[in-house]
Image 1 (cartoon, rainbow, N blue to C red):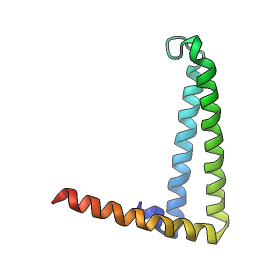
Image 2: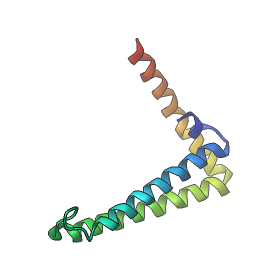
Image 3: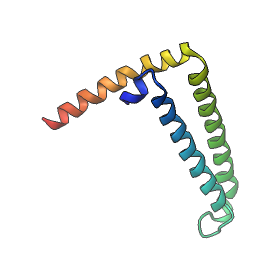
Length: 98
């Protein structure tokens, strides 16, 4: 979380890694759609529509990453919005260690 709250490219790189991993996961699930052992025939349409929604989410994630790279105000807003999450996580972690 600390890296996401920063103002450097490291947080953006983490977001891109997450998007790439999500895309790989979607591709893996799409490949499973034709395997009756993984997805019964009666569930393929629903599974396919859910994966379309996943692709739509991935597209929004990638557009957000593009904005983080190209718009300083967006990057600053993202960093400022992430800082409270970082602080909250630190406090929670500190309380759990006690």
